Amino acid sequence: MIGWLRRIFPGQDTAGSNAGTRHDPSDPFIINLYDDRVVVHRPDGQREEVAWDILERVVVRVSNRAPWAGNAWLILIGAEDSGQGCVVPLDAANHAELVERLRALPGFNQQKLDNALRDAAAGKSRSDAICWKRGAGAGTEGANAGGDVGGSNNAGSAS
Image (cartoon, rainbow, N blue to C red; front, side):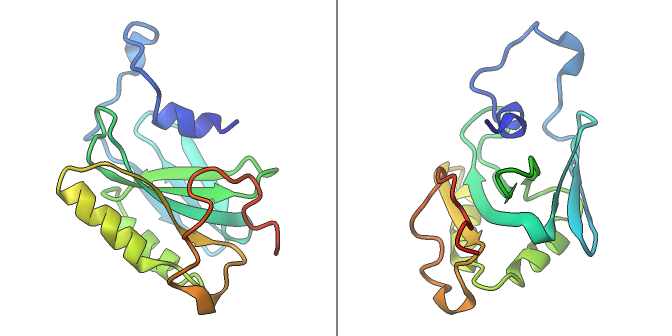
């Protein structure tokens, strides 16, 4: 379903399956912001992107899986039929600019992001929290991320 997400957060490390593709979690992810899209360059050389006009959800996750345990991640999910999306740690190069851009989205739930950052700093993991969802509206800032945590395939279908 979302293969790019599974590659970042695999179920188990398969040592020996690709010995040449071991990645150091301290290698940087690099975020490039453009007027029409965000592009993430991963340490393994892969590139992910999502266009702003098809962005459907922004999810924050604090992983409990090695080697990224205790780090906060943003998952930017594009429209289901687009195949676009990005997964990026909140310590990536240019992360502050990305967060500023996301905060400008109508109805972005800053408290959910702050809670995840607090848990990451304390070394805790947490379930996914939706910080923004297309169509949730600017007037529902406190409530826009409450339902659909982690699994609805109909995000943004009302827009």
